[in-house]
Every structure is written in C-alpha cells, then in structure tokens.
Image (cartoon, rainbow, N blue to C red; front, side, top):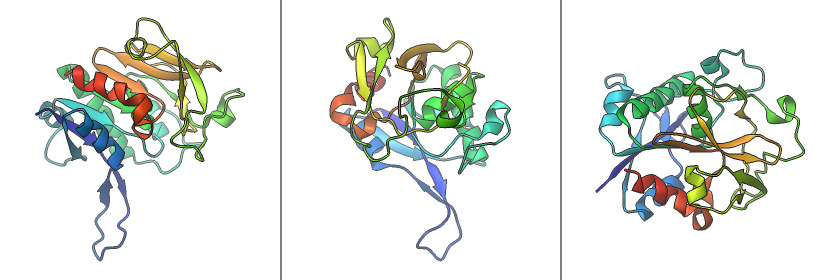
Length: 228
C-alpha cells in the first residue's frame, strides 16, 4: 500500500489542560488519498529527523492549504500577511526541496502551491486586492465547494491531460504567485493573468482546493497517486 505524507498545521491548545500546540489536518485531504487506494499519514516538524529523512519514508507528499506564508521566506517585510508560522514554513519548504531531490511526487494545494513557488526562489503577492490589479474576486469564502472563476490550462502540462482547456475553480486565497520560481512551468492561469497552477518534474501545485470539489477534481489526486 502506498503511504502519503500529509503535512499538518498548528494551533494553540483548545479544550485541553495541556499547553502543547495541536497539529491538525482537514479530513478531506485524508479522504481524497484513501479514495485512490493510498494511506495518508499526518506529519509535522521534527527536532530529530530532517525533512529529507521524513520524505524518504513516504511514497508521496501533500502540502495542503492553511495560513499565510511568511514573507520572510522570500525576503520581504510583512505588510499584509497574517497568522504566519515561520518554523512550519521552513519545514514545508525543506520538504519540497527534499521531494525534488529524491524525485518524490508532491502535490501542493493553495498554501502548498505558494510554498512550492517560494521553495524555488519565487515570491508572493501578500494581498491580491492591494498588490494586483484585477476584476476577478480571488477570495470567495462563502462558496468553498463551488467553482467561482475559470482558469485557462496550458497545453502540454499535467492539467491538460486531465481537463478541457478551461476549468472552473473555487477561489479561497488572498495571496498569490508574484515572481515565478526558477525552473517552474506554469500549468494554468486565471483570466487576469494570475498564476493558478505550476509544475516541475514530479512536483505539482494548484492554487484552488480540489479536496473540496472532489467529484470534479478527483482526477488531480488520481494523477498524483498514479505518478508514484
């Protein structure tokens, strides 16, 4: 059975007398992996094992959505980013670099997509509404399970083997790719030109949330698992 590492996020303790931070995941990611016949395992930063040692123990890695990526990771001061966790960011970036080195399949979703770009030397818009001129609403929290705007798929990329030339996606982010990371290929763009999907070797990333639109987007997880 294939084992897929699913990265977690952290929060302050809730409902406990202990003061340890809690590591969590949205169960939709786990369900999406299980539906493809693979077994998901939650992972978090380790004080003992390196990211490369952790990556080596799995067949593939998923970096899910979550809070903002710290601007410190791409050399900027924090202007409009919130709820950042630089230690978690650093661990996830190291996981991406380890996956690339070890040729392990990795799927980045929303925040994970943005981290892929940063790991390869790219940067982010800290707030699209402030930093990027567009008529498209890229943050529609009221419709997390529905497509709200189209993206254009680039021919010859992994997405072009799964979907038609355009795809309607849910849009739940206020940050996005500014400078594209070195060596990355653009797989899809929004109508305003904002990058919505990227890839390099066995690493793929999408800005939207396919786990929340599983019936329409299940092929993304199927492609990811098949690539192992």
